[in-house]
Image (cartoon, rainbow over all chains, first blue to last red; front, side):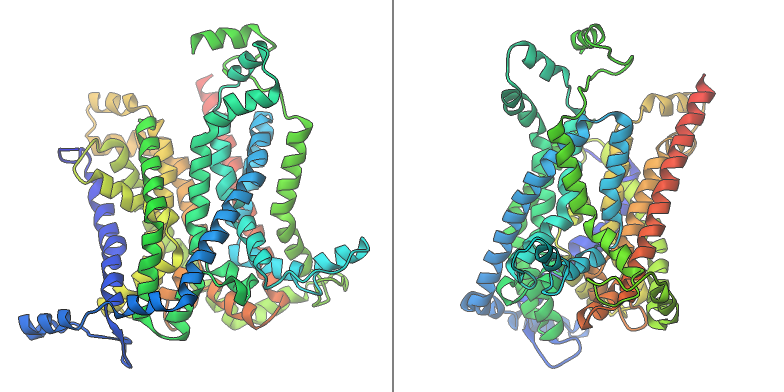
Length: 297
Length: 287
């Protein structure tokens, strides 16, 4: 890729994002090499611009990988990373299993119905995420609605709140629209005459699905899965409100290190490692977006 | 495409101009849709019901009551937080819409320029970046710049992460926009900037507006980034709700949520009605 941009519109967003999005990550990395201190802000060393070259050298000399060493030695964080990845993977898969039939059903409806359904999918997404998760507390708690419902059916009550299951339900619930929307977009664009042709050639419906519909919907599946998986890994609110000690996710541990322990350097190290684990899916997502960009031109 | 067009028009009753035929949803489709939407809406319906429940308990219906809404109006901290949230939302959404639209234009019209991959990466990364990482990074920036945390830092933070969403929405509309219209305007003597303002922008305006609404809603709803980047005196509504929720169930929260849902639903309905009105007016004008 060569040449200057053909549009000056790039300047303002590029500067904004460079300063407020890209540059801060360097700061996070630099902080992960620092030590925590009883100071405001709570880290050392702090660079003294007026000290000249000597001060900069002293600053660089005080940086170390101590935080990363601590991370690798403490099993708690390794477990949290693995737990987060497991929850995110399971949540994405379940969201796919629930969301695909929904999106497919929506794509099969008449245009008028489809638009109403689309609006209905988007509406919860636009209402407070925090409060919708909080509603699940009322459903899942021991004296909550779920157990009342089970009691009416004559079944034993279950204790789901503050368990990994509750976190899983919360994750699927919150990210379902992120799965349904790209799937719906891909399925809605599909040319149904291909299915007609397959039927004319004698293919049973299930086979037409696997050989025609499914392959054509894969870009939507990939987009939906990445849109769900990546943020799920770093999710904080859901494990915080619905989960217990057995479901410590990495987003929550970053929060706790930062706010509760005031250990900014350590929180930064945890965040950097999280970023590294997500680099591969993020790059995949960017490449998919770039391909969609190209296709759209 | 031509063959399938003929196929579609010859085969069962295709509507004119509609390339694809739909047989309509099967019973399996209808069941999936119903179950899926029921799952999606269950908590919302419950929250609305609980907000009118005279009893504090979630499993007992104590009669219809609006006392929680009355209590809401007395809760000064909640109201102050709501006011902060609305101001942050309005300001950040507007700036994010401008920047996101510019970013979309740059990506669609800019051609293959050096650094395009990195620029596109920066625009799309916030969509998937976990909020704790973004919040932490932004906080460190403000600390490094010795920028006191408060209203403006939250506003800057929200603008940064919502502009990606605006960019996505505007981009998908811009890509289908016919440049011939702009070129015609320039042939008739407009400068590129004028042709953008007078031809392109009015045409893509629904997408720009949708982007604004999306940015506003995301800002209204954000907890994590606000918690990292806010300061004293600039507590946002989600922050306030979160701290109250941790202490225990207060039915006022249900009232807040129901109000939010009502406001957003009204906004969406008005938006889609104006869309219908606009396309209707355009069709009538063209006829």
